[in-house]
Length: 563
Image (cartoon, rainbow, N blue to C red; front, top):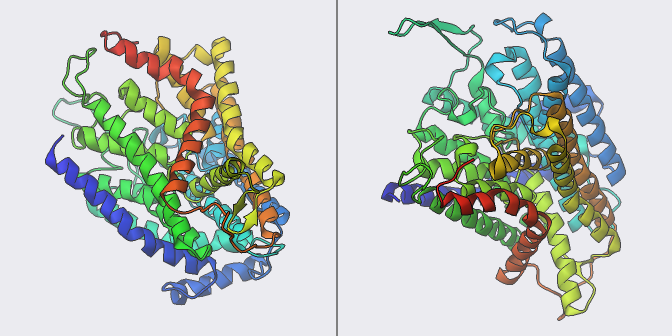
């Protein structure tokens, strides 16, 4: 452990803490429709979009209408992105003349980017032209992230409003998240990345002949604009196959730091936004504290594991699969952040992590991606666990559970259980099928517990809408393209549906003043109970599978055995 590693960690946490209230206050003004620092510039464009689309932003929706608009918009997004891939050889801005994408891969990719997963069973620089990358993937990076934020804001309105029938307007929330938040931040970040050396061009690939005389093709393209939103929107899909390990996506230690900070920036800020919406900032800081505790615990375990002498390689620390310009600490910090935040971007090969570090990354996915999580998605996933925690606390103290002065009843608990368990069902059923039929294991690069972990991680990443991979299993085949597409779709919308149902139910309830027996939902006690509920759900559901994978592999690694 080097001193500059500690300096960077504390600098990262310090900046994150500093920008959380700033971004949180800004987002609160944006989604409450108040004037903000960008209103003079973006306001006319926002109003023009509403006029052209025939949207009345002040007309609010019941939760069923809100959900209907959201689902229709996302299904249309899948269809458009699918069509772009199936016709790309006839489209402009394809200087390398890439052919049309096969249907199974195109469907997998369309579902992947619309669900904010960005799972990639292909290498971008050898598969997709510039137009598909920009008009297809980058557009979905924006609107899928905006959709997650919109769902959170709708849920927050449902939890905080009194005797209301509506939870906002989906179209207004979508437009505001894109115009005021994601687009400006992405423009700034793209400029920073270009300054650091990330390409942004429509030029064709360049042929270079190094001293050895073997010609190499250097891929280019509009990279910086896609990398900016890939990080800020916690999307994760790389322009290049190596993702943020590629020097054209992440050329310097400074760009690496900025990319890691961008992943957590909006999810952290949304905790403060939520506190402002509840009119009690402690509510937001309590959730932020629970997220931070889980993040630091996972990072500490991973960093420790990667620095231990390895009986398999004989090395004092594990540099396999890592970029020398980043080193162990930055690689482990990135892997922890990206799996906490459902981003999926990687700057090192997760397949080369030690079993414990890889197990932490896997566990982050299995906990529901609620440790900061994806933009919006992590926070509304965490609020599902908050509802369950309040319900369990009510059972323990022997009174009706309440949250923000509203009673938590069977209706909300049922929907919360559906939202919490839907990804679990997808992961375990998908993994069981993959282990049972030849198509699931035919493309495994490793056997034994590591091969099991590779399949396990693939389904966990899909259902958690993360997109990262251990990458030791070939997934560009019909079995994985279709099964993972199903997991990605259900992992996104089987949670959003129940969350909006909870929002609609809670919005209509009256608020009762707190009494001496009211269980407080702020402070260390509640944060500790919330963390315990999250870990128990993950441990009880997945512990047998984790035992067969990373836990067994860690135990036998000490004997010098690898798989």
